[in-house]
Image 1 (cartoon, rainbow, N blue to C red):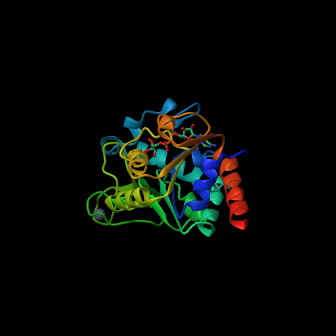
Image 2 (image 1 turned 135 degrees about the vertical axis):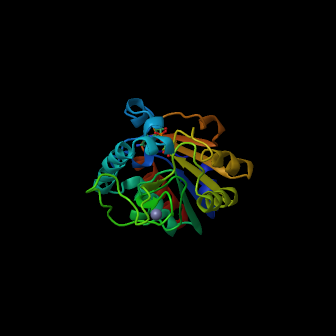
Image 3 (image 1 turned 45 degrees about the vertical axis):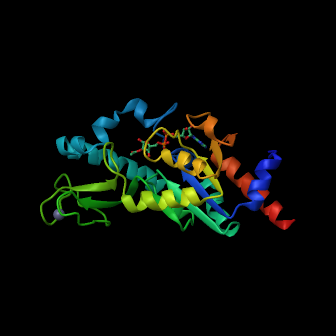
Length: 246
Ligand code: OAD
Ligand code: ZN
């Protein structure tokens, strides 16, 4: 792959970089994305699965779906894209991952500084007393319940819910302070998460997109690389290593 001179200059000068990621970075690990050709939301309705009212109406169905996804995620491994991002930690002063994914694969690949905007499927909490249950849950009597009697739900953000404030503000701070901001494998249509792209851009960061196809935000990016994240990100890592050797 041939990188243009502006991009190479930015890479050599950058100290703080952010990777803003979405379902596309985990696609090569075998975890389906939400939109696009084989997207989950083509077959299932988000409003029937990923919102609080759906959970109150039919917690069993919502849990079945999350347990299905949990199984896929547990069987999945970080791919070359996650690993390349983790390797960047050796090449820049500050690397921050701001992810919309709930699959924990960035941490499993070794990334240290990770903000999870939409929660984490490994964690659960009681909707009444907010006690966390991060161990295996007991489904023997249907839906898992807290010792207080409340329903236990996965710690993921559903449509209509606020993002975890500490995660969003941490991600936002890193975004506006970044020298380069990579947008990887996201359709960038879900807000407030997608707003971080514009926040970083307005603050003067150099915006680089990595996606298999054009997205809503392509025209706002300084650079777009079209292809699989698992191919392009390792090439960028190799390029940086060459630049650092000079
Ligand atoms: P989407 O499914 O909307 O978008 C996935 C993006 O990844 C698309 O733009 C694809 O073109 C791209 N893509 C697919 N395979 C790729 C690959 N191998 N390399 C690079 N890019 C690839 O997923 P998100 O943008 O993450 O929210 O969706 C945002 C939010 O909507 C999710 O966090 C979830 C969903 O509903 C909640 O559940 C709250
Ligand atoms: Zn409780």
